[in-house]
Amino acid sequence: MVEEINKVGLVGLGTMGAGIDEGFARAGFTFTGVEIDDAALERGRTHLEKSLAKAVAKGKLTEDEQRAILGRVTFTTSRDDLADAHLAVEAVPERLDIKRSVFADLDRILPPAAILATNTSSLSVTEIAALTSRPGKVIGLHFFNPAPVMRLVEIVTTVVTEPHVRETATQVVTRLGKTPVAVGDRAGFVANALLVPYLNHAVAVYEQGLATREQIDAAITSAAGFPMGPLTLMDLVGLDVLLDVMDVLWDEFRRPRYAAAPLLRRMVAAGLLGRKSGRGFYDYSGADNPAEPEPTAPLAQLVGDGPGQISLADLLLVPHLNDAARMIGDGYATADDVDTAMRLGCGYPKGLAAMLDERGVKNVTETLAELAAAGLFTDDTAPLLTMLAKQGKDTLRS
Image 1 (cartoon, rainbow, N blue to C red):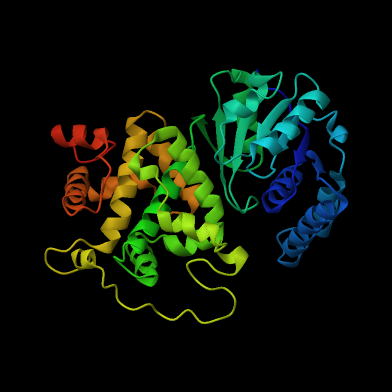
Image 2 (image 1 turned 180 degrees about the vertical axis):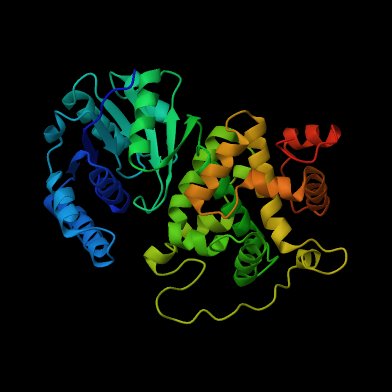
């Protein structure tokens, strides 16, 4: 059974929430956005109005469509105004104590048949569901920033999510013009569980003095065609956000791959959070970012393009491919789901499974062995890769 969803509520109108707000309103839903006070509410309203005005100016929206969208949206500081909503989405900060308050109210206010959704990117949906009297009707809807543009939504179900709730959520996401990827409740889900350890690994490479920040970023954009290098991306996302995800991954998996780089933790403690603080790996205060000197650390001689050296791109990318193979081998996500998540959620030109298949299982496993022998890779080769190599198969989709 797929329920009809027409009235939607959203708690939290920050950057992410305001973007989700716009997506629902554009898709024809009657929408109510809730914020904690008038100032925050006005920021959310302004964000929506400016975004729609830009769309009109660019000819992507008519003025009549703009008025119709705004006419479907109500802004309020009272969660009680969600009493007739069919679906409520939470987009508040990633703190369980804040979410506990939100879900207690939503559980009390909304009709018993209504669905409650969290936009959490790292917390356990199961724990959030347990805060309510309707855990079977709680689901994760993980949007990606900027929400109006990014096409991926991870639909996260728990062991008690009712089947019709997942079906309804899938219908809603599709109506928004997004691409759903359905996964179970596991730390980081698909995209963050793959992206964030790769970013953290880049920090470790930088911290060990194996390459400069410019070399690290250029190696990936050149070799893999990623939209930006890992250190630049970290500055954009926020180092504190990424550290939080790393800690969640560590708490669940306890693998060396998920241990936050000491430099990352120190930078967060120092308030060097990236663009939002004015400085991270790069300086955003208006000062020039002079190129760093060539690394002089002893292990730096192992990395390069010369004979017997390991390329910096391989050092950064191949463990990333190994993570994808591990996730696929664990049965958590298919190769197609991994590729969809990384292309639509992270802007990759190709999915990680597709990249691995292009390189070949033999090449990837041999490179991992070279990295391990040099002391530059401390995790294990994914069992799926080991099995495929023994079988003489050279692609994941053999």
